[in-house]
Length: 226
Image (cartoon, rainbow, N blue to C red; front, side, top):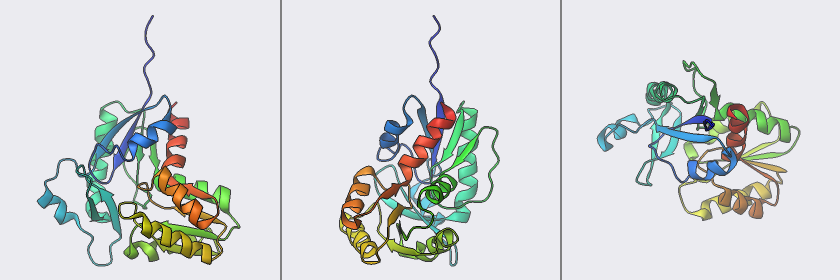
């Protein structure tokens, strides 16, 4: 009897693969779907990575490298590298590709379904929290204004706080307490780097429901691919 092939979803990250801190946890929500990873910075040397920093006025993005360190990169320099990673995963037989970053990007070329974490998170949050006083936590201070612009069309009562997923948990606790003081009714963790454990920390401090990007995105990806 022929063994059934497991469906595959290509997972593109901004940094380097593998990402056991993220994809390892996402496996729980992906179920029978097999993730195949590719990082936009996989083939770059440390010197080359240093050259993809954000320029003045450009959106900054925070990601993680293979050695566990984090790096801030610029959106424009990442677009062609992300496109190459998407194309490579499609060539390797991925049934769909997930761009695992909640930042906005221009359109990419693709021949298989392309799932954008940013769109999945925004539309999912709109479905469950519209009309609420919403708090959003983003990783970097320089992302605060862009985060406010991103969510302000959906939520008229919006508060933004900063806490990196790659730093001390105290920063997340402070961000959650700030949102609690603002009397938010719902919190969104706007980065794929935030973990389930971090969600629990924020929920305990803020005292309200918390939407975790990676769990929402992984569950929807599994629905599409499976």
